[in-house]
Length: 334
Image 1 (cartoon, rainbow, N blue to C red):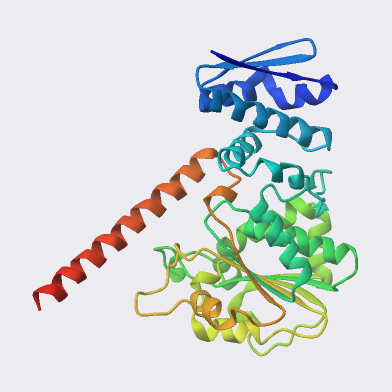
Image 2: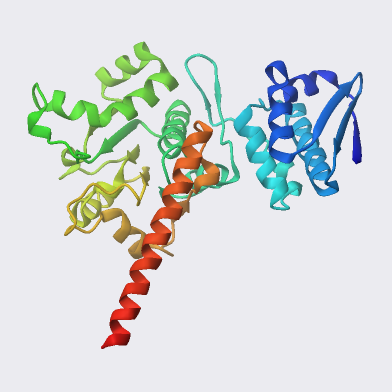
């Protein structure tokens, strides 16, 4: 049996780390196979495997360090820090304390929660055009909208323009009821939701009526030059190569563009090339343009979302390997 002891200076930080009914400690115990007890100003970690005990200690110390810097600790934070410790990157934990991008209408600070998200937010700040590519739940759209609202509040831009291609995941636009705006609204809903949270419904409506905020399908961008604007193209994997080129050339003076997408969720016909995939190849290395790739480790939704993403990644990898093996066998027969 191996024991490690952590001496605690400020109990209020420990309370934040423990979580409601010590749920965060129970999570560390379950994942690392250790037992954790706390008595007054000491936290004792016990276990049969010395390496697991050491990792649990480093995880708790890292969480206490983040709590001391005012970071909120939840189950997702605990899992992410455990992942850093297991990969030997515990020295980076202190760098995870994040600056606030903006504050929502209800006073909630919006911050990147992973190193991938942090690099993404920094890229948006430093570059004129940023491509954020990654699976569902990595905060691509949410963080981009937060950055847009922050720039708008600082008067760095005069308008926020949010757009998506109206490509259906197995549905048809014409079957939806109502006029054109009613038909495209469901595709723009995630953008509305993010703006409502950042600004509040009343403020959002006011800015919308004044033309300071525009949420529209990608087709509405054709023929325009967008100056002094923060422009977000969401679900860009469903753009055609022509649409992507059209959108990128809308960039005007004093503007910033963020393009988000997930290359594993392309809803285009099989014979059409995704504009996002082509843009990644064409724009790689161009000055003023950043390409940020987020991964399953950056998923900040329910832990099951992360597991689902990882399961699909493994499945696609196996499928690709099998296809490669079949091609090899076919060539060898010839």
